[in-house]
Every structure is written in C-alpha cells, then in structure tokens.
Amino acid sequence: MKQLFELKAVSALGLVLSLAFVLSRPQTARADDFAARIYTNAAGQTLPYRLLQPKDYDSAKKYPLVIFFHGAGERGTDNQKQLVHGTSLFLKADVREKYPCFVAAPQCPDKQQWVDMPWGGDSGTRPARPSASMQLAQETVDALQKEFSIDPQRLYVTGLSMGGYATWDCITRFPERFAAGVPICGGGDEKSVTSAVAKVPVWAFHSDDDGAVKVIRTRNMIQAMRDAGGSPKYFEYFGLGHFSWGKAYGEPELLPWMFAQRLGQPDTFQLKTPAPAKPAVARFPDDSEFPGLGPIRKMDWFKTLYTQRRVQWWLNREQDKGAVVFLGDSITQGWGNLAQTFQPMKIANRGISGDVTRGVLYRLKEDVLDLNPAAVVLLIGTNDLEEKGEPEVIAGNIKLLFAALKTHNPKMPVIFCKVMPSHASKSRPADKIQKLNALVDDLVKNDPQFIGCDTYSIFADDEGNARKAEFPDLLHPNAAGYAKWTAVLKPIFAKLDLVK
Image 1 (spheres, rainbow, N blue to C red):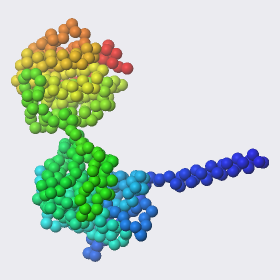
Image 2 (cartoon, rainbow, N blue to C red):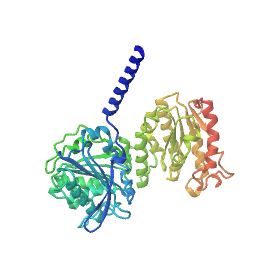
Image 3 (cartoon, helix red, strand yellow):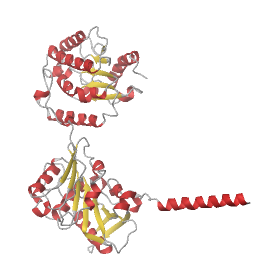
Image 4 (cartoon, one colour):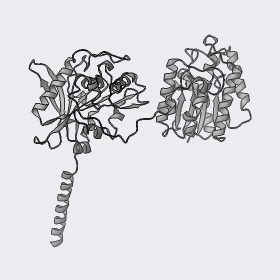
C-alpha cells in the first residue's frame, strides 16, 4: 500500500509539474488572434479590418499601434486575405512578449487602391486627397485610439507592394501622426517630400530586380528624403524580385528599430546589421571585361536575364555544389525538366538564353568552377554564329574554356556537345556549324578529360539543317529533341560512373 501511495503521489506531482510547465511556457499565437472587425463611419461607409491586441492588455498602460497595409492581391471583403503576408511577424511568442502592441490590418475593397497612383512607371503624382479606402483606414485608427489605451507618440505604419505605397502615403500626408514607417517594395511621389516629411524615421526595403514595382520608386523617395534633410534607412536586396517582404520582415533589428521611435524624435538607432552588399554577379560587365574575342551581347533583355539568373544561382550556390553542371545558352536554359530527366544525379542548369562563348567565359568561375562540379556538360557557340562570329574565333574562345576547366580540376569530366544543326535563315549555315564542330574536336583529341557528345549528326537532315519535327523554330529542340539528347548523354554518364 505504501508503494502504491508513493506511486500515486509521484504521478500526481508529475501531473502538476507538467501542467505548470504548459501554463507557464509562451503560447504561440494564431491568425485567429487577429479579431475580425468592421469600422463604420457616420456616413455608413465601412472598412473590414483585423485587430491584434497586446497580450494581457491593461487599459491602465499605453501601447503602440502598428497599422499594416496589405498588397493588391489581398483586396476583397472576406476580412481574411490581408493576413496572408507580413502579419505573422506579430504573432511570434517572443515578439508578443517583448513588444506588446496593437496591430490593425485593414482590407482594401476590390478594384480600389490605398493610393490612387499607377504602380508600374518610374514616377507618380500623389492625388490631392487620400483615396476612399485610405481615408477610412485613418478613421479606423482614430476610432481605435478612442476605444483603447493607445500611445499617440507610437503610431507606426508598414506595408508591402500596394501597401508600400500606402505607407509612403501615410508618411508624406501625415508626418505629424506617425512615429515611423516601414515601406516595402512600394513607392510614392518624391515631389511630396517636405522637410517635415524628411524628419519621419523610415526604414525602406526593395529588391533591385523587382518587376512589379520598379526599384527606382523607392530609390527616388529615399533620395528625396535625404535631399530634404532626412536620414532614412534603406536596404536594397537583390535577386528577390517582387517578394522582398519575406526578407524585410525577417530582419532581426526591424522591430527593435521601429519600437524605439517616438513621434517628432530623430532616429538615433544605430543598426548593427550591415546593408546588403551586391555580389559581383549582380552587375553586367563592361565590354573590356569579357575574355576572348568575337561578339558579345548587350541587348537590354539579355543584360537583365544575365544578371537575374546569375544572382539566383549565387544565392543557391551552396546547394548546387558538387552537381553535374550543364553550361550553355537558351537550349540549355530551356530544358525545363533537366533535373528530373537525370535523377538521381544532382544537376545544376547554368544556361542563359542568348549567351555567347565570351559571356560563358566571363561567368565561368562563379557559375561553374566555384561549385566544384562532378562534371560539366557544355553546349555553346550557336549564338556566336548568329552574331557573325567566325568558327576559328569561336573555337579560340572554347579553347580558353577548356583550359580554365582543366586548370580547375584536370580529373573533372567535361562533356562537350557539338553545336546542334540550325538553318541558314537563322544565320547559322550548316557548313559553318560543321567547321566549328570539327575545330573543337581537334582541340582536345586524345585528351581523356574531354568527352565529345554528338549532338549534330543525330539531328541533322540530309542538308545538314535541323528538322522541324525536332526543332520547330529551327533552333530550339522540342520534347522529342531533348529526348534524343538525353539518349546520347546517358551512356556517357554511366561510363563515367556519374549515375549513383
């Protein structure tokens, strides 16, 4: 009996301790903690919004209020979509403990904007009056200040995309109201920046390759604030496209900076986090930087694609280390299911549409060699021919490529694919393709490191041109063409024991 009593006592004690632990540990908040509300003004106009209250709200204390403006994709009347991006930051247990605050997230109606200003251009003009939805959002803030114990010295505004425009609109229209603003991938009217606006602490974010809202929209606003005497903070990311808010709201100093600001007070917060530094791959090189001889490409679309793809690869460089790297132009880039085709081999696609041999030479180190590849599959030269490059010059550049690959690792297999057939109408006559392929063969004959892959004769018709059944545009292979390429590569990979 005594043992049974002791066992029950221990069990009861364990239950009490377990319950105490569960009750004492921080509880993760949920999206439902943003209570669904609707603001209605005297004229009967309404605006749905969600409200997160401070944990353990005490009306005897004063709390900050953050107003969050969503992007265009979250418009509507469901009073839910506005919580998709950004607001989860304020639900984290440590944030709720350290920064108790109100967060209001209004929802803009369909077909309306927080700011009646175009998004896609290089600049815009702010309307004289706030939009209808912005006016209702400001009235919602007024109502909340009457209902709850909110510190008027700590009203903060943030938003992304369309909500980034809303943030700039609040800063420029109501500089006497907001203690700080965090606009992300938005923009405004730089002409609306006054000396009073410039005093509002701002930390803005944008990615330089944003295709939806041009980065110049944020750059212009930041420059206007600096010209007016302000000292805004600005982080310009790279390689994130329009989705810079994930990284911005993940900045560890964002909330400490924001909640340190007070209305009318200068920003004295010293960031420890350095501003993002762009890698060399984010810049398109000058003409003189391209190794080798012959044509280079400088079309705007090519420059943009060249840097975008190289930045993305740079960001993914760790996970691509040790892969079999396919290096080339649009024929390589366009192989959409390349990685799946050669499973379980690890594949890295390093094709850039429009690239030429000098472009590949320039990017060889960061895009290929730094990955320490298991092997390299090279197909390049067809665009050189289109740009009137002579086979001898093109082969000279490929010789430089081969030398760099050998210097990096003389035991690394290099599979060089013959330039595929095209058509004279594409400025790629069969005789020049054949001559180039023969010259490249001669470069590495009797060198076992370099393995030729015949991707010319398997495709060429009787006249040495591409067949439309496999190259509908007489340049790029279709699914049938890629299947043939796969068939000649697989035995090579097997012989090299690359297929594990």
